[in-house]
Length: 350
Image (tube, rainbow, N blue to C red; front, side, top):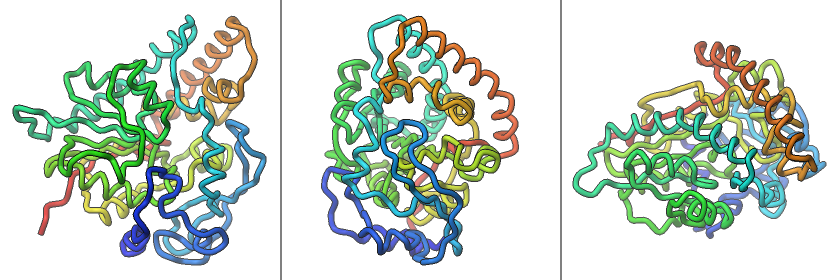
Protein backbone atom coordinates (compact mmCIF):
# COMPACT_ATOMS: atom_id res chain seq x y z
CA UNK A 1 0.00 0.00 0.00
CA UNK A 2 1.35 3.39 -1.01
CA UNK A 3 1.62 5.96 1.80
CA UNK A 4 1.22 8.81 -0.71
CA UNK A 5 -2.11 7.37 -1.80
CA UNK A 6 -3.48 7.53 1.72
CA UNK A 7 -2.18 11.09 2.09
CA UNK A 8 -3.67 12.25 -1.21
CA UNK A 9 -7.04 10.94 -0.07
CA UNK A 10 -7.24 13.55 2.69
CA UNK A 11 -6.95 16.54 0.33
CA UNK A 12 -10.67 17.31 0.24
CA UNK A 13 -12.87 20.25 1.13
CA UNK A 14 -13.47 20.89 4.81
CA UNK A 15 -16.12 18.33 5.85
CA UNK A 16 -19.30 19.13 7.72
CA UNK A 17 -20.46 17.39 10.86
CA UNK A 18 -21.59 14.28 8.99
CA UNK A 19 -18.82 11.66 8.55
CA UNK A 20 -20.90 10.03 5.82
CA UNK A 21 -19.98 13.04 3.66
CA UNK A 22 -16.24 13.06 4.29
CA UNK A 23 -14.16 12.39 1.18
CA UNK A 24 -16.97 10.51 -0.55
CA UNK A 25 -15.95 9.71 -4.13
CA UNK A 26 -18.19 10.49 -7.07
CA UNK A 27 -20.19 7.37 -8.02
CA UNK A 28 -18.75 5.53 -10.99
CA UNK A 29 -15.38 7.33 -10.96
CA UNK A 30 -13.04 7.32 -7.99
CA UNK A 31 -15.23 4.70 -6.29
CA UNK A 32 -13.62 2.16 -8.62
CA UNK A 33 -10.05 3.33 -7.94
CA UNK A 34 -8.19 2.18 -4.86
CA UNK A 35 -8.03 5.04 -2.33
CA UNK A 36 -4.71 3.74 -1.02
CA UNK A 37 -2.68 3.36 -4.24
CA UNK A 38 -4.99 4.81 -6.94
CA UNK A 39 -4.92 1.56 -8.91
CA UNK A 40 -7.95 1.07 -11.17
CA UNK A 41 -7.65 -2.72 -11.34
CA UNK A 42 -9.26 -5.04 -8.83
CA UNK A 43 -10.63 -8.53 -8.56
CA UNK A 44 -14.05 -9.43 -7.20
CA UNK A 45 -13.85 -11.60 -4.10
CA UNK A 46 -17.60 -12.06 -3.74
CA UNK A 47 -20.95 -10.32 -3.92
CA UNK A 48 -23.56 -9.94 -1.22
CA UNK A 49 -26.23 -7.82 0.45
CA UNK A 50 -27.15 -7.00 4.05
CA UNK A 51 -27.16 -10.51 5.47
CA UNK A 52 -27.31 -9.41 9.09
CA UNK A 53 -29.81 -6.57 9.44
CA UNK A 54 -31.78 -6.78 6.14
CA UNK A 55 -31.76 -2.99 5.65
CA UNK A 56 -31.48 -3.37 1.86
CA UNK A 57 -31.69 -5.95 -0.91
CA UNK A 58 -29.10 -4.17 -3.05
CA UNK A 59 -26.15 -6.40 -3.99
CA UNK A 60 -22.63 -5.04 -3.50
CA UNK A 61 -19.25 -6.32 -4.59
CA UNK A 62 -16.33 -6.84 -2.24
CA UNK A 63 -13.14 -6.34 -4.25
CA UNK A 64 -9.41 -6.60 -3.68
CA UNK A 65 -7.00 -4.11 -5.26
CA UNK A 66 -4.65 -5.93 -7.64
CA UNK A 67 -1.74 -3.69 -6.66
CA UNK A 68 -1.84 -3.16 -2.88
CA UNK A 69 -4.50 -5.83 -2.09
CA UNK A 70 -6.66 -3.53 0.04
CA UNK A 71 -10.16 -5.00 0.32
CA UNK A 72 -13.12 -2.64 -0.02
CA UNK A 73 -16.77 -2.38 -0.93
CA UNK A 74 -17.41 -1.45 -4.55
CA UNK A 75 -19.01 0.79 -5.42
CA UNK A 76 -19.30 2.83 -2.24
CA UNK A 77 -22.93 3.65 -1.43
CA UNK A 78 -23.83 7.32 -1.52
CA UNK A 79 -24.05 9.20 1.81
CA UNK A 80 -27.85 9.19 1.53
CA UNK A 81 -27.89 5.41 1.01
CA UNK A 82 -25.38 4.74 3.76
CA UNK A 83 -27.51 6.49 6.36
CA UNK A 84 -30.32 4.04 5.65
CA UNK A 85 -28.10 1.10 6.59
CA UNK A 86 -27.76 2.38 10.18
CA UNK A 87 -31.18 2.02 11.84
CA UNK A 88 -31.98 4.05 14.95
CA UNK A 89 -31.63 0.87 17.02
CA UNK A 90 -28.12 0.16 15.68
CA UNK A 91 -26.65 1.39 18.97
CA UNK A 92 -27.28 -0.70 22.06
CA UNK A 93 -29.43 1.06 24.62
CA UNK A 94 -30.53 -1.16 27.51
CA UNK A 95 -34.22 -1.50 28.22
CA UNK A 96 -35.71 -1.98 31.64
CA UNK A 97 -36.56 -5.67 31.50
CA UNK A 98 -34.80 -8.67 33.04
CA UNK A 99 -33.37 -9.96 29.77
CA UNK A 100 -31.84 -6.59 28.87
CA UNK A 101 -30.29 -6.33 32.33
CA UNK A 102 -28.70 -9.74 31.78
CA UNK A 103 -27.42 -8.55 28.41
CA UNK A 104 -25.79 -5.52 30.05
CA UNK A 105 -24.12 -7.72 32.67
CA UNK A 106 -22.71 -9.83 29.83
CA UNK A 107 -21.57 -6.72 27.92
CA UNK A 108 -19.77 -5.37 30.98
CA UNK A 109 -18.00 -8.70 31.38
CA UNK A 110 -16.71 -8.88 27.80
CA UNK A 111 -15.94 -5.14 27.59
CA UNK A 112 -13.54 -5.62 30.48
CA UNK A 113 -11.11 -6.86 27.84
CA UNK A 114 -11.24 -3.47 26.08
CA UNK A 115 -11.02 -1.52 29.33
CA UNK A 116 -7.90 -3.40 30.44
CA UNK A 117 -6.20 -2.85 27.08
CA UNK A 118 -6.83 0.91 27.19
CA UNK A 119 -5.87 1.15 30.88
CA UNK A 120 -2.51 -0.47 30.08
CA UNK A 121 -1.99 2.01 27.23
CA UNK A 122 -2.66 4.88 29.65
CA UNK A 123 0.20 3.68 31.84
CA UNK A 124 2.52 5.30 29.28
CA UNK A 125 0.82 8.71 29.55
CA UNK A 126 1.88 11.30 32.13
CA UNK A 127 -1.26 12.52 33.88
CA UNK A 128 -0.14 15.43 36.03
CA UNK A 129 -2.40 17.43 38.31
CA UNK A 130 -5.25 17.58 35.76
CA UNK A 131 -5.48 14.26 33.88
CA UNK A 132 -6.45 14.49 30.23
CA UNK A 133 -9.57 12.58 29.14
CA UNK A 134 -10.06 9.42 27.14
CA UNK A 135 -12.04 10.29 23.99
CA UNK A 136 -14.03 7.35 22.63
CA UNK A 137 -15.00 7.90 18.99
CA UNK A 138 -18.18 6.06 18.05
CA UNK A 139 -19.08 5.75 21.72
CA UNK A 140 -22.56 4.30 21.17
CA UNK A 141 -24.43 4.04 24.45
CA UNK A 142 -21.29 4.84 26.47
CA UNK A 143 -20.91 1.67 28.54
CA UNK A 144 -17.18 1.37 27.79
CA UNK A 145 -16.63 4.97 28.91
CA UNK A 146 -18.62 4.37 32.07
CA UNK A 147 -16.31 1.47 32.87
CA UNK A 148 -13.24 3.66 32.25
CA UNK A 149 -14.72 6.36 34.47
CA UNK A 150 -15.22 3.77 37.21
CA UNK A 151 -11.46 3.14 36.94
CA UNK A 152 -10.86 6.82 37.71
CA UNK A 153 -10.21 8.16 34.18
CA UNK A 154 -11.90 11.31 32.87
CA UNK A 155 -13.85 10.46 29.72
CA UNK A 156 -15.63 12.05 26.75
CA UNK A 157 -17.73 10.28 24.13
CA UNK A 158 -18.26 11.27 20.52
CA UNK A 159 -20.79 9.82 18.10
CA UNK A 160 -22.49 11.10 14.95
CA UNK A 161 -25.76 9.58 16.21
CA UNK A 162 -27.69 11.99 18.42
CA UNK A 163 -29.55 9.02 19.92
CA UNK A 164 -26.28 7.33 20.89
CA UNK A 165 -24.72 10.49 22.35
CA UNK A 166 -27.90 11.17 24.32
CA UNK A 167 -27.99 7.60 25.64
CA UNK A 168 -24.35 7.86 26.76
CA UNK A 169 -25.28 10.72 29.05
CA UNK A 170 -28.73 9.59 30.09
CA UNK A 171 -28.05 5.89 30.64
CA UNK A 172 -24.36 5.73 31.55
CA UNK A 173 -23.75 9.24 32.88
CA UNK A 174 -20.82 10.14 30.64
CA UNK A 175 -20.46 13.39 28.66
CA UNK A 176 -20.81 12.90 24.93
CA UNK A 177 -20.60 15.08 21.81
CA UNK A 178 -22.72 14.54 18.72
CA UNK A 179 -20.65 15.22 15.62
CA UNK A 180 -17.59 14.37 13.58
CA UNK A 181 -14.09 13.86 14.96
CA UNK A 182 -12.68 16.27 12.38
CA UNK A 183 -14.71 19.08 13.95
CA UNK A 184 -14.79 17.97 17.58
CA UNK A 185 -14.83 21.09 19.81
CA UNK A 186 -11.71 20.04 21.72
CA UNK A 187 -8.32 21.79 21.91
CA UNK A 188 -5.26 20.34 20.21
CA UNK A 189 -3.21 17.95 22.35
CA UNK A 190 -5.98 17.75 24.96
CA UNK A 191 -6.58 13.96 25.10
CA UNK A 192 -4.64 11.24 26.89
CA UNK A 193 -6.09 8.60 24.59
CA UNK A 194 -8.35 8.42 21.57
CA UNK A 195 -10.14 5.11 21.09
CA UNK A 196 -11.90 3.89 17.94
CA UNK A 197 -13.52 0.50 18.33
CA UNK A 198 -14.96 -0.63 14.97
CA UNK A 199 -14.94 2.84 13.44
CA UNK A 200 -12.33 3.00 10.66
CA UNK A 201 -13.96 0.33 8.51
CA UNK A 202 -17.15 2.44 8.32
CA UNK A 203 -15.51 5.63 6.98
CA UNK A 204 -15.13 6.78 3.39
CA UNK A 205 -11.69 8.12 4.31
CA UNK A 206 -10.10 6.77 7.50
CA UNK A 207 -7.11 9.09 7.00
CA UNK A 208 -8.98 12.22 8.07
CA UNK A 209 -10.08 10.61 11.34
CA UNK A 210 -6.60 9.33 12.17
CA UNK A 211 -5.07 12.73 11.50
CA UNK A 212 -7.75 14.37 13.64
CA UNK A 213 -6.87 11.93 16.43
CA UNK A 214 -3.18 12.84 16.00
CA UNK A 215 -3.98 16.54 16.51
CA UNK A 216 -6.07 15.87 19.62
CA UNK A 217 -3.59 13.57 21.35
CA UNK A 218 -1.01 14.80 23.80
CA UNK A 219 2.61 14.20 22.73
CA UNK A 220 2.72 11.03 24.86
CA UNK A 221 -0.94 10.14 24.24
CA UNK A 222 -2.11 6.82 22.88
CA UNK A 223 -4.36 5.88 19.99
CA UNK A 224 -6.28 2.61 20.36
CA UNK A 225 -8.06 1.22 17.32
CA UNK A 226 -9.90 -2.02 16.67
CA UNK A 227 -11.18 -3.35 13.35
CA UNK A 228 -12.17 -6.75 11.93
CA UNK A 229 -9.15 -8.61 10.57
CA UNK A 230 -9.61 -9.53 6.90
CA UNK A 231 -6.56 -11.78 7.24
CA UNK A 232 -8.26 -14.05 9.79
CA UNK A 233 -9.08 -17.74 9.45
CA UNK A 234 -12.80 -16.98 9.62
CA UNK A 235 -12.56 -14.85 6.47
CA UNK A 236 -10.70 -17.65 4.69
CA UNK A 237 -13.18 -20.32 5.75
CA UNK A 238 -16.47 -18.44 5.57
CA UNK A 239 -15.91 -15.82 2.85
CA UNK A 240 -18.96 -13.61 2.35
CA UNK A 241 -20.68 -15.36 5.29
CA UNK A 242 -18.11 -13.98 7.74
CA UNK A 243 -19.82 -11.36 9.91
CA UNK A 244 -16.71 -9.15 9.82
CA UNK A 245 -17.46 -8.20 6.20
CA UNK A 246 -20.82 -6.67 7.25
CA UNK A 247 -22.02 -5.56 3.82
CA UNK A 248 -22.92 -2.71 3.23
CA UNK A 249 -21.74 -0.89 6.36
CA UNK A 250 -18.04 -1.85 6.17
CA UNK A 251 -16.49 0.16 3.36
CA UNK A 252 -13.00 -1.25 4.02
CA UNK A 253 -11.72 -4.61 5.26
CA UNK A 254 -8.24 -4.23 6.68
CA UNK A 255 -5.43 -6.74 7.00
CA UNK A 256 -2.65 -6.10 9.56
CA UNK A 257 -0.24 -4.69 6.97
CA UNK A 258 -2.94 -2.27 5.72
CA UNK A 259 -3.24 -0.83 9.21
CA UNK A 260 0.53 -0.66 9.70
CA UNK A 261 0.96 1.43 6.57
CA UNK A 262 -2.11 3.55 7.24
CA UNK A 263 -0.92 4.39 10.75
CA UNK A 264 2.60 5.11 9.52
CA UNK A 265 1.22 7.45 6.85
CA UNK A 266 -0.71 9.43 9.49
CA UNK A 267 2.15 9.86 11.97
CA UNK A 268 1.77 6.87 14.30
CA UNK A 269 3.93 3.92 15.26
CA UNK A 270 2.51 0.68 16.63
CA UNK A 271 3.34 -0.08 20.26
CA UNK A 272 1.20 -3.18 20.80
CA UNK A 273 -1.09 -5.47 18.78
CA UNK A 274 -3.69 -7.93 19.98
CA UNK A 275 -5.66 -10.41 17.86
CA UNK A 276 -8.28 -11.47 20.38
CA UNK A 277 -11.28 -9.67 21.81
CA UNK A 278 -13.52 -11.45 24.29
CA UNK A 279 -16.44 -9.31 23.15
CA UNK A 280 -15.98 -9.65 19.40
CA UNK A 281 -14.13 -12.78 18.26
CA UNK A 282 -16.35 -15.58 19.64
CA UNK A 283 -19.54 -13.57 19.07
CA UNK A 284 -18.46 -12.79 15.52
CA UNK A 285 -18.12 -16.48 14.70
CA UNK A 286 -21.47 -17.24 16.34
CA UNK A 287 -23.15 -14.50 14.31
CA UNK A 288 -21.50 -15.74 11.11
CA UNK A 289 -22.95 -19.20 11.68
CA UNK A 290 -26.40 -18.12 12.92
CA UNK A 291 -27.14 -14.47 12.05
CA UNK A 292 -30.80 -14.91 12.93
CA UNK A 293 -29.88 -15.53 16.58
CA UNK A 294 -27.72 -12.42 16.99
CA UNK A 295 -29.43 -10.28 19.68
CA UNK A 296 -28.66 -6.97 17.96
CA UNK A 297 -29.84 -8.30 14.59
CA UNK A 298 -33.12 -9.42 16.14
CA UNK A 299 -33.59 -6.02 17.75
CA UNK A 300 -32.90 -4.15 14.51
CA UNK A 301 -35.14 -6.46 12.47
CA UNK A 302 -37.90 -5.89 15.06
CA UNK A 303 -38.30 -9.63 15.50
CA UNK A 304 -41.48 -10.25 17.48
CA UNK A 305 -40.81 -12.62 20.37
CA UNK A 306 -42.05 -13.09 23.89
CA UNK A 307 -39.75 -12.65 26.87
CA UNK A 308 -39.40 -16.43 27.16
CA UNK A 309 -38.54 -16.87 23.48
CA UNK A 310 -36.12 -13.94 23.63
CA UNK A 311 -34.37 -15.46 26.64
CA UNK A 312 -34.23 -18.90 24.98
CA UNK A 313 -32.70 -17.48 21.79
CA UNK A 314 -30.20 -15.46 23.81
CA UNK A 315 -29.16 -18.60 25.70
CA UNK A 316 -28.72 -20.58 22.46
CA UNK A 317 -26.66 -17.73 21.03
CA UNK A 318 -24.60 -17.59 24.20
CA UNK A 319 -23.98 -21.33 23.84
CA UNK A 320 -22.71 -20.77 20.30
CA UNK A 321 -20.42 -18.01 21.56
CA UNK A 322 -19.03 -20.32 24.26
CA UNK A 323 -18.56 -23.09 21.69
CA UNK A 324 -16.68 -20.68 19.41
CA UNK A 325 -14.22 -19.69 22.14
CA UNK A 326 -11.62 -22.48 21.65
CA UNK A 327 -11.38 -21.92 17.89
CA UNK A 328 -11.14 -18.14 18.20
CA UNK A 329 -8.45 -18.44 20.88
CA UNK A 330 -6.46 -20.73 18.58
CA UNK A 331 -6.65 -18.42 15.55
CA UNK A 332 -5.69 -15.44 17.73
CA UNK A 333 -2.69 -17.35 19.12
CA UNK A 334 -1.59 -17.82 15.50
CA UNK A 335 -1.96 -14.06 14.91
CA UNK A 336 -4.95 -14.67 12.66
CA UNK A 337 -7.75 -13.64 15.02
CA UNK A 338 -10.91 -12.09 13.62
CA UNK A 339 -10.18 -8.67 15.12
CA UNK A 340 -7.08 -6.53 15.45
CA UNK A 341 -6.66 -4.17 18.40
CA UNK A 342 -3.72 -1.79 18.18
CA UNK A 343 -2.12 0.64 20.60
CA UNK A 344 -0.20 3.33 18.71
CA UNK A 345 1.93 6.26 19.78
CA UNK A 346 2.74 9.49 17.94
CA UNK A 347 6.04 9.19 16.08
CA UNK A 348 8.75 11.49 17.37
CA UNK A 349 9.05 14.69 15.36
CA UNK A 350 12.22 14.90 13.30
